[in-house]
Length: 122
Image 1: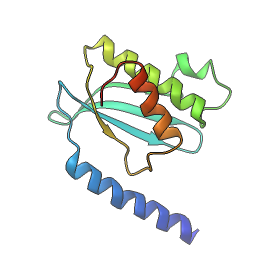
Image 2: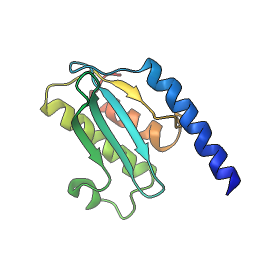
Image 3: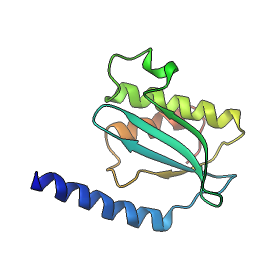
Image 4: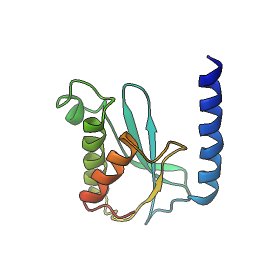
């Protein structure tokens, strides 16, 4: 249990450092990613007003129906496509990527690459 606490504290420390530098505005919002063991979530956030402009996760109906499990790379790719579609609906083409202290690897990388392939510019 002690090892898990250390890993969590290190991630929070990395997250603080990232949040000092990454700031989203309405024209170029922050794409924030959160991953749990069974799901992955992302939001487009305007930090000037503190509003969430769009969100996507493995729990929404469009994605959940296509996948048996939401905690893998395939699910992250679908969520990346979905957030790019939501961004296009509200006229957003550019974002700032906030990986929330997670390593840019695995599911986080798959989500980002999928969003890039769907014409979202980081």
